[in-house]
Image (tube, rainbow, N blue to C red; front, side):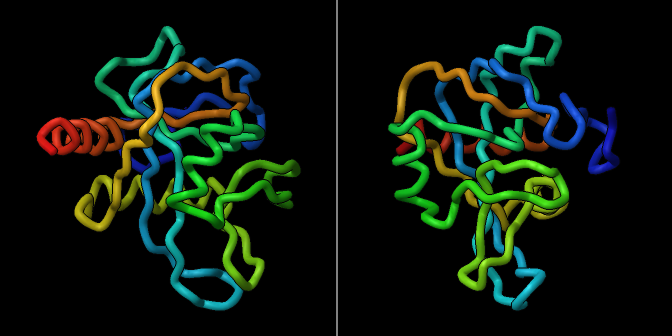
Length: 168
């Protein structure tokens, strides 16, 4: 299913139709950018999880994957995310009709995955320098109940982050 962010994007599911057992292997990345809150107008750092190591057999290896509608995370992984992005919490989405991890503004406004991912994908394609990519310092493989979207632009961001990390 194409959502029109770029010709190279496909998605696994519709809103909150998550897959119970997606296997995600390190490295796992936190992708972030600034976005205005729809309620108060304050600019906040929004975040999404991304990987290029997903167990979906039919997916192309050079693509990156944004994890969406993440319903739960292992404690160690969540702890590492919260070190970098403390306003990444589980909240109920009226649009999605369920609860999942999302960025929340201090005013209580929710940054739902649909809108955050649209913003991140647009920036990855048009203004990649405005995006921060942090590799989480964890090793392993996790089974995460979530959906995902696939994008060559995200894959390119992750490749650049891995090169920078290797050269550090």
